Image (cartoon, rainbow, N blue to C red; front, side, top):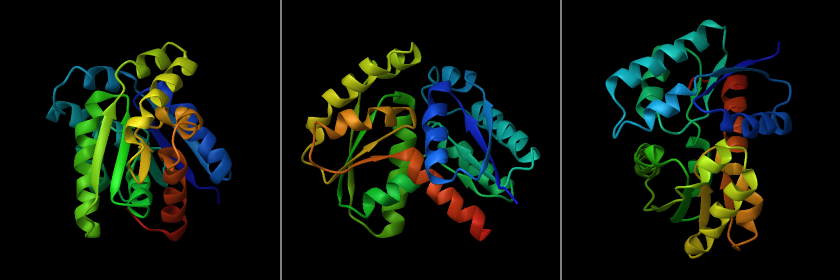
Length: 222
């Protein structure tokens, strides 16, 4: 039977990258989209993720589970604590957008660079990364650069300028062992970033789909 994976989106710019990854990695999966772009708008106005925002996100996730989801994949990286709570409350795999990419990065070195475009996500992503480092017993460290203007251009439909701005900062991380592109939306810049550096450049969508497929087919709850 085809596996139904519900994708929770907090911004429409994350949708194309994850669908591309599913088409290339797991085309047999049935993907269902749930979008609340108000989540990212309101999250950007909060200095920290509030309890009200966590409650709202978890309700969103329960709606996804009610759609008979066999797995729930979140495509926005700014809601880590809410995703953790959702994962405890539903009996199917719930996958954060970046955890699979983090594991891949740790396998390739200890000096990890990250290019981000959505400021509110950086704190939660850094906390998540440090948790994975602690669990793995690694001494890896993270160096993050925020490219402030890029995501605004992408939301206006100017992917070319988004990619150019992200790639322009890549050389500042050239001393790292590997560079992660922080968000699903940032994966569009992968080719441009790789043209600027000679180290591996990782994107989140393909890694996430591979991990979700393995979890669902094995019947494992993350």
